Image 1 (cartoon, helix red, strand yellow):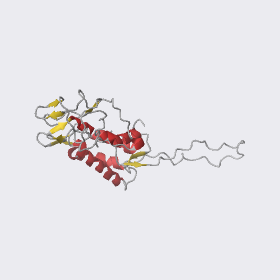
Image 2 (tube, rainbow, N blue to C red):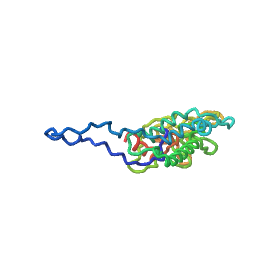
Image 3 (cartoon, rainbow, N blue to C red):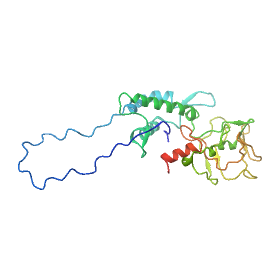
Image 4 (tube, rainbow, N blue to C red):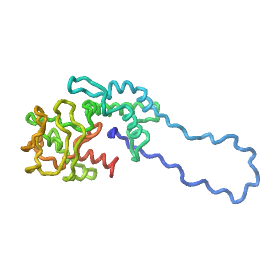
Length: 266
């Protein structure tokens, strides 16, 4: 899950020939070779160098101290992330950029080139900088309910924040089919005191008994007695299952659909 963007489409290397060498002559040669081969063939499988990954591994301590850090909501100080660890990061990087994962593209590392691998380092730095802003800072794997509407956090913010409606952000064949009966609850919530609960989606079109209320930060409780809309006017949670996820908080039907199309079930 760690690497999603900055992919570079590669042409898969041609396969080794599947045919065997041409058949030997029907008759044995009349002469024997003047001398036997003195050595085995000089061409042997080579070990592919790993410049980018090796360099990143050499900077482990620096990355752990400066990058994989989260901020405390209590005192504002940074501390080692709980959810984002170096070993997991390096494992994801190897899978997506070196070993491959069954697709015809990989995360661009230029790992076999002792000069161009620096481009790969820039690619990794761009990814990590976005991940630091999106998820590592709050030590979360899910988009948080951060937007206040008239001083309250609408529960329907799971449908979209900043006026967006995530489930309606489609892009043709890549889009997911919205399932109104789907029920999903996120894992992460904010680390501040009395933070709004994790996002969720559930059936119900916003009628009596299926209203999406709001989160009362002062009381630390959810108020469900009356409908409360987000900035896009949603007062329900039906089909609102496309909030941000992962290190880059990939959100919206189109983006999650593309992820599913290229890396997942499709």
